[in-house]
Image (cartoon, rainbow, N blue to C red; front, side):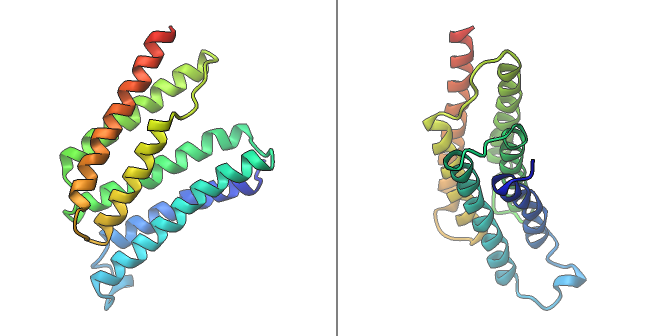
Length: 178
C-alpha cells in the first residue's frame, strides 16, 4: 500500500539519482553555465530534503500506525540508495577517500545481508542506537563534504569508525543470540 510514509521513502529513492547527477555531471549540457558551487548547493539541498523525509516517514508510520511490509523494505532501501549515491558522487569529484567509502559500503552491504538473514529466521532487525548514530554521522559527513566545508574529511573518518563499530555490534548480537 502506498501510504504517506511509503510515498516519502519512494520520493527519497527518486531524489538519489538527481542528487548524484548534480555531483557528477557537472559538464552536462543541461548544467551548462551553472557554477560548480551552485551544483554543490543543489546536491546538498536534495540530500537534506531526502534526509528529512527519512525522519518523517518513520515518525509518521509509527505515530499514525501505518507501518507496512512495503515500508519495511522500501525505507532501508531508500536510505542505502541515498547514501550510496552521495558517497559515490563525492568520491567521483574527489572529495571523499575511496578507502573510507569502500569500508562504509562493504559494511552496509554485509549488514543488509545479515539483516535479511535474521528477518528470514524471524528475528528482530531493528536499528540500534549506535546504528542510528552511524546514520546521523554519515549524513553530517556527506553534508560537509558536499559543501566542501572544513572538517568534512574528519567527519567522514569518524563515520567510518562508527559504521564499522555498529557492524561489529550487529554481528556480535547475531552470534550471541544464535
